[in-house]
Length: 202
Image (cartoon, rainbow, N blue to C red; front, side, top):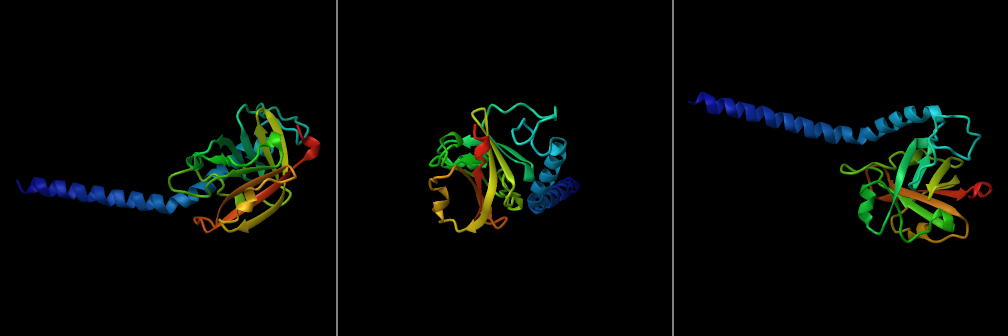
C-alpha cells in the first residue's frame, strides 16, 4: 500500500520539474522569438523586394505582389513589417498590434498621423521589436482606405515618455511611429518620423 502513494509522489515531482523547466525556458526564449519572426518574414518577402502589395514606389513587374489591401495597414520593408492598423479609443488595442492614436490625424487629412505599438511583451505582439533598425531614408508605406501613402524617414530619436509633443499636429504631412526603448523597458520612447512623398500623394 505504501508503494502506490510513493509512486504518485514521484510522478508529481517529475511533473513539477517539467513545468518549472518549461516555464523558465519560455521566459528565457521569448525575447528571442521576435528576432526569429523577423528572419522568417524577411525570407517570405524577399521575392517581392520587401513590399508584399502592389506599390507606386517602383515599376511593378513582379506578379507575386498582392492587390492593395482593403484594410488599413502599415508596411515597413526594412524590417519586413506588414501589420493591420487598429483604430479606436481603447489603449487595449495596443495588445492587438499597431494602434492609430485617436487624437491624431489620418493620411487623407494630412498633418501628423501617429502610430504606436509594443516593443516587447510576454502577453502580446512584439510589433515594433525591430523598429530601432529603421534609419533616415528608409521607406514606410501606409495603405489607408484603399489608397497608398508613401513616406520617407527623415528622423529617428529617443524621447522621455512625457514628450507628448510627438503627437501634436504638424503643418507637414507627417507619419510618427513610436514604441518603448530600450528593449524590454518602458523608460523612454523610440520615435521614427517620416514625411509624405508629395509626388506620390493620392
